[in-house]
Amino acid sequence: MSQVLGNPQLEDEDDDEEDELVGLADYGDGPDSSDADPDSGAEEGVLDFSDPFSTEVKPRILLMGLRRSGKSSIQKVVFHKMSPNETLFLESTNKICREDVSNSSFVNFQIWDFPGQIDFFDPTFDYEMIFRGTGALIFVIDSQDDYMEALARLHLTVTRAYKVNTDINFEVFIHKVDGLSDDHKIETQRDIHQRANDDLTDAGLEKIHLSFYLTSIYDHSIFEAFSKVVQKLIPQLPTLENLLNIFISNSGIEKAFLFDVVSKIYIATDSTPVDMQTYELCCDMIDVVIDISCIYGAY
Ligand SMILES: Nc1nc2c(ncn2[C@@H]2O[C@H](COP(=O)(O)OP(=O)(O)OP(=O)(O)O)[C@@H](O)[C@H]2O)c(=O)[nH]1
Image 1: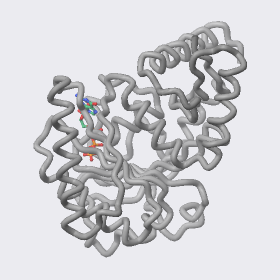
Image 2 (image 1 turned 180 degrees about the vertical axis):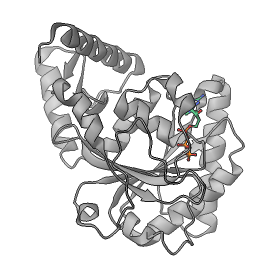
Image 3 (image 1 turned 90 degrees about the horizontal axis):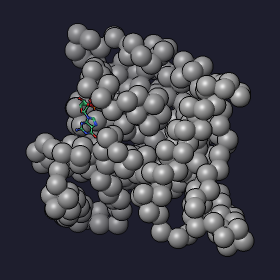
């Protein structure tokens, strides 16, 4: 049986969502570029890259990838509890959207959602400043689309970012795999992995490590992948893992996760392998607890 640990902050959830989008950089060249996301409660304005907020020491996670690859959907489903079907109605992002995620002392970072058409040669785009403070760069590839252009973009993005900051974790989400058969998923992952690493080797940058994940917003894979990305940014991870190891060996519990209840990402787990079904069961349990808490108003 699994143990679910965490600190729900349910009463603040709605308020948090209101406050979460803290800034938007105008990066659009289209007619919609001044439109704020109507659902986000966003505070709109031109982002001053030199503002004091942007130099905060919170780890920064960037969501990049081609247009319509699924970046905003990932953010909305994981951090705003949007149902996957609702993402069909999301409008294209025309600005850099920054969101502060401060669910607990461990889940405390900024997510920057980039528009698909970002141009590194645009002098108004200060990519050096952006990459300098970045902990993880998630590059989203639409696996249901032809991914050659996405791979070229991935290469350009990673090499640019690495030049500025060699400490960035590069995470590649091979996304929308719900539309692929199991064999096709494995083949796509192998092909993307091979091509992306070959491109880096050809550029003499084989030391750059890319991590690959098969993801979809229609199942728990996106939460699992995000969990792994976030864990790499938590310096206390080895200690937490150790504590969970001690916990399961002394309690007879089979598997333990330390959850961020609000987002359902797990911050740490013991060192036995993660079985997706156990993780899904724990996520479902969290949903039940949240639903019951809402009904009985315990908070
Ligand atoms: N089948 C499937 N569709 C998805 C998934 N994730 C996102 N989508 C769909 O992909 C489309 C584009 O999603 P967005 O989140 O707007 O993409 P984006 O990368 O933010 O797009 P830009 O803002 O234009 O850069 C939407 O219709 C989503 O419903 C997924 O895991 N599976």
